[in-house]
Length: 206
Length: 300
Image (tube, rainbow over all chains, first blue to last red; front, side):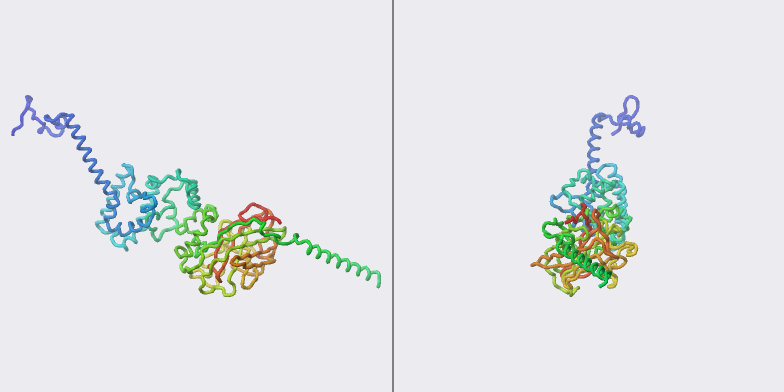
């Protein structure tokens, strides 16, 4: 079917004339409003799809899909209070290791693509290799958390809202000191979810 | 007899009479230098001793091992965080879960003790009473003495004593610690008798029925102190009561006590024929003579 030219001789739909012409006059068949609404709906669908796919990579099931995580840090995490406790309120991998707000989350996700490289090269794919690298990996995470002022911990825990009366003596004293000295959660709570690595120095203890 | 001889005799007689009079006065006036007549009227402080395992000062001050190292560096006392949980700590350690490579089955993790203190102006009286825990049986480390109790005093000279009581004498290389030489006794950092850096150590042993007054400076010396005047203990059913009488002033290796002052204080019980590190210990506390402290000795 040949194109129908309008009176000016310019082709309908602006195929000849390139992108700019297309932008100026996108369609004869569909109205601007229709195009906008359709675009909006498709945009939402794509965005939603993108987000769903990305959030799928934040689930516990996704993280422990890799044996490096399942065999090592997941087994350790299962012994801790963040895995199972009286009230059943949990913190899974992403709750501590992936920021909740969009900008920081995107940055972290891009940084985390190095993990795909690590998976391909098998950098920690045996228990021995994992233990050898544990201190380095732990220090990286501690540094990240400290730089963010334990942002992920504070998603759920608030130092200001801690009820000192409900805390045991030792916890009360330590948190008082944390408030006094403007400390951040990860300063003391290393090892809260996974075993502490061997070879830690006094410097690691902030 | 010459006049001079008669005068000398008179003088002797007078002196004799005066001496006798003084003796009578002392004997007839026990309140002048004696223990409280009714110990039950003296208020008691409850202290729970606990089993310390291998928790030497080197471990305690290491941040990667002990979360309280930071608080210690800031000047907090051990009791500030731990005073309410000594029984739990003792249980955790004695069961071998933490800080105990060679747990002894059946050994009690903690012993609650009642401490009473009083003084009469020149002598400090300390009474400790506690219920004997069930013996674990097993090998006897100290065959002669089923029970020993000791306390240490410091006038603020020993580094760390203000925070930890007697713990500043506990080191990873002290005898009975894993890998330690049997000859290496307790010591304190920069310990020196001449320099005044020492703990005054007083102990009572049940088998020998004897009190010991020594000190811990660069090494532990059990005897030579002049302050201890009496130490006696008795077992009533399953309750021990041990009372010490210690003069305020002694000699070398004795901390001089004075009213209005506060001293660093800690004590420990070796029960069940234990020796070395296998005792139950107290956190660091303060002993005050007529002044506010964890344990107060008031004038009788």
